[in-house]
Image 1: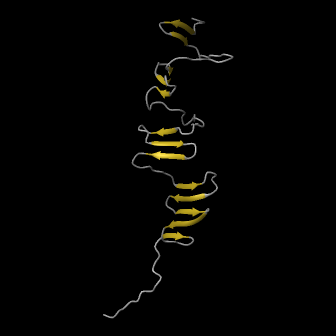
Image 2: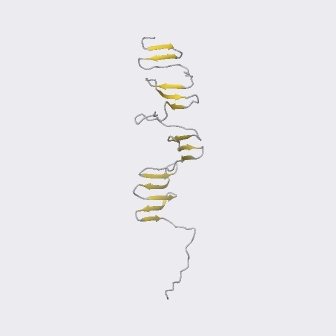
Image 3: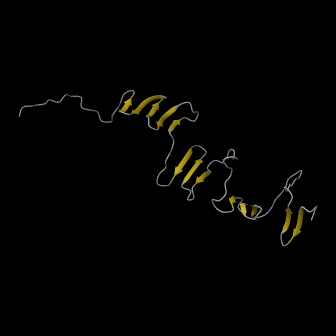
Length: 178
């Protein structure tokens, strides 16, 4: 016991216990913590986070601990190319970048996008492809110009409408003689 606040002892495990404030480990070079696995526990001894033998940071119990909170948000998260962020207990939703393309994949029965206004734009955010507005119009653009737009009474098309099958260009003759 050192000063009544720190205990160092061995009971088949080497232990350093601190009962007064925080425990600070400091070194001018590097501190190595070796073990497999490494546990981060609360004061009651509950495993909060574990670095397992594969090097994965996992919660002490699945789905029980958060990273960040509404008042202490986590900053950016960086993933390497061809690595995915999975969501849901069955991991049916994933987001990834394969090094060339960005992909959102949902293998469940349906994917819902919920918003009062959804816009599709280029990566620079300066050219629109289309917009869906709650209770309003839906439109699609070509070269940043509205070409198809819905309204409460129908659809407006700006420009020519082409069809793969042309309408007949002759006038039919009607015979009303019975």
